[in-house]
Length: 105
Image (cartoon, rainbow, N blue to C red):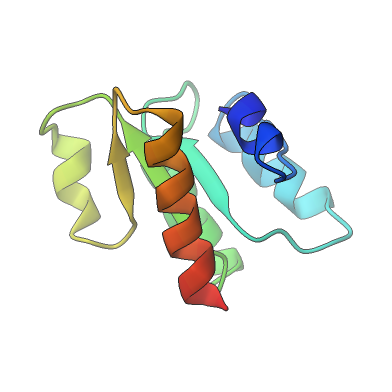
């Protein structure tokens, strides 16, 4: 995913799980435009991470990704965050990112 974003002119940071992502966000000295996260991650899942980010950075958009067809975690979203379902193509990912970033302008 990072390579797809970078090949298309975007800069991307990586975190290995939700807690690490929160740590990275807290240490940044510059603003970022978007968080993309899988819902299923160790230690802190993407949904819990997304709601935590929302409280700390209320204007930071978040795109969630899932391979679960209709799991309990997806039902918790209630339309709160945009969602891309696996499997997806690079084009699908880039279109979702553009929709979000375009709507933030």
